Image (cartoon, rainbow, N blue to C red; front, side, top):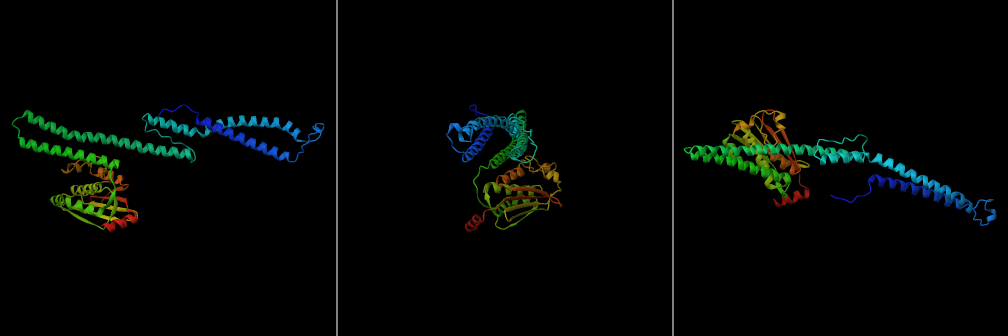
Length: 370
């Protein structure tokens, strides 16, 4: 943004300091003169001008001294104000320099302003915190773009390879080719839809309404029950009325992703999934647990990263597109909630989603509607 040139803050502060010093000096001299005049006679007899104290004599002797004092105060205020402003604005100069470095693309730079806490240190610390978050966000976006490009390239490369085989081998089984192309294109479509959902949730471009998480859990369980029966997994669901505010579609997607992951990444046979909802003082809680292989805390902490499936979990044949928990994390944060992943000692994982509870009056209205 182009701005016309103006006075620097340092010069403005210098003028302000000098002005206040001059004003204080003038008020002091005026007070001295005013109170002094009350006790001095107003003798207009010029013969007695230098013999007795009077106002004319005081004016004759006091005015030059007052002018000299005011001149000294002016110089003292300007010089002292200039030096004091330079010292006071030194942290701001350092912050400005860091801001310019960030504008040039250096996100790793930090101000780290020393000294005791004050307004400038508070601003510098807030700026450093913002830079740290921004740097982490940019790094995450770069990793996401690289991983998304890799994941999208895989089905496209597979389609190209299948078409090349069909073109060079006219006798190739057309039905098999169509089935494989259908599977590859389905995976590409699923990945694209997951990316769009992730972007929509991250932008928070959704309308908020009253939602019952217990109904979301029941609906997701019923939809995935055939998959659970096919894999020999038992699902147990319980929970009372659990009111929350958010997007019904996104929260249903969140619940479905958690239940789907719990079913797919489970024991080969005889596994169990527990889905529960509850209400605490300030939050509503959705918990999904499952049996399965033992996971290390280090691996669990990375499962919410996009396209992160774990070393052995990829080879299960039901790895999906690798965005299930990443979508859950984004939807949770978009609803101002927290997501916690904890490995179970007996194997498997416990996923807890905490969302802000509805206000008491809104909850009463919701119960009345239900």
